[in-house]
Image (cartoon, helix red, strand yellow):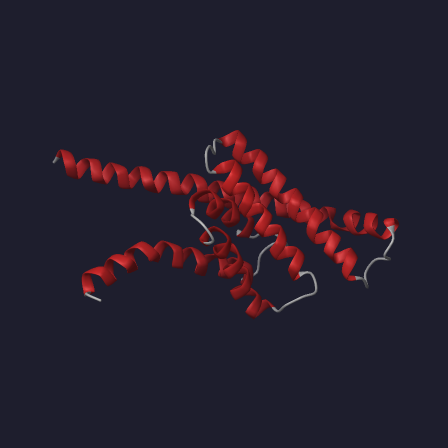
Length: 181
């Protein structure tokens, strides 16, 4: 492979590599509980990436960071919730992602994560009795974490979507300035 092609590939993949490294760091470094970029990345990748890449990006970030953090009994539920969140990005945000739609989808994403993962905590046993009262207790005890989930999802999702718009605007301006010069 010639060096020009290799440089072009490196330039194209650098933002993605930096995103993965930053997201892994955001999960590993100290942070408020559940205040992570993964749901925002799942929505963003579902909205902007084609095919299986949209699903692989958030899952690979989870997998790499879980190598350090450790694996747990609710991983299936956590990873499954991010697959569903990626689908929301793919089918709801890909065509139109204005401010209000983005806000609503982020809220739904946070709710999906909350409902699925806490169901997994209840189902995995140990913490709560396996009856309706145990399920209710599982959800009630997780309410304080929902606030951080929602705030983190809003913060990172809006940073990703509007940061991407800003960068593409700047790049468009640079390209436009070169054409007119």
